Every structure is written in C-alpha cells, then in structure tokens.
Length: 145
Image 1 (tube, rainbow, N blue to C red):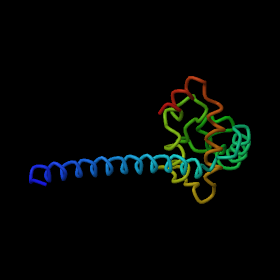
Image 2: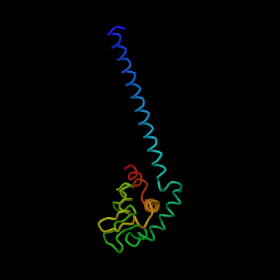
Image 3: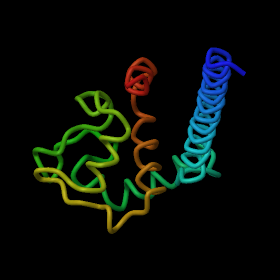
Image 4: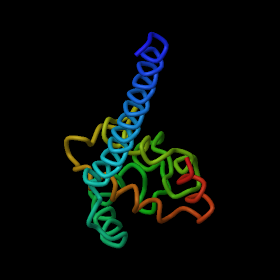
C-alpha cells in the first residue's frame, strides 16, 4: 500500500469511529432522558391517588392546619391578618405548584413551616384541595406556569 491509500484508510477508520461514538452518545443520552422521566413518575408522592382522594386528604389537612389562618373556605385574613386568601380571590393562584409546595414545606415570612408535620403527599393534597376553589381559567393559567 502506498502512503496515500494508507492515509485514506486511516481517515475512513476515524470517520467510522466518530460516527460510532456519536451514535453511542445519542443512544446513551436518550436512555438517560427516558430514565429520568420514568424516575420522576416513580417519585411522585401523589402517584396512586385519584384526584378525589387527594382532595379528601387535602380537606382534612386544610381543616387541621390551615383554616385557622386562611379561613374555612380559604377566604384568608382570619387570626393572622397577613394570611392571604387561597380561594382565588387574591394572588395564590399566580404561583406554580412547586412554589406553593415549597412555601407550605419551608414556611414564609410569617407562615410556619409544615415540612416536618406533613408528608409530601399531604402537601400536594392540600394544594389540590384549595385549587378546587379557583375558577377554571385561574387553574388553567396557574397550571401552565
């Protein structure tokens, strides 16, 4: 073989290797994305509960922990003047679920943290419960965030 054909052969080998590496990385990346999506579903604390069950759990959680400040129907400003309405008449529906969940779990400026009192499922359930008071367009807008 002459030098020219050796270089051509080496170039083809390198190109083939590059294609193989590229394909392997694409497959591995796709597999990781699929795995991540599936794991997210496995870790969903509300998985296995119907919406009706979540609302029932949420109602019990709300009555036991929230209504003293936020009102029986989420109208807000009961024993704590700064406790906002959760019934759609104020700003609660502007916040995405994750932010609502973090506020319930970690607390806020005045609101105490409930992360050690409530399970993740109960936090999701209470959010679903008070979202039941929101108008359909409010809920749709909030869920799009």
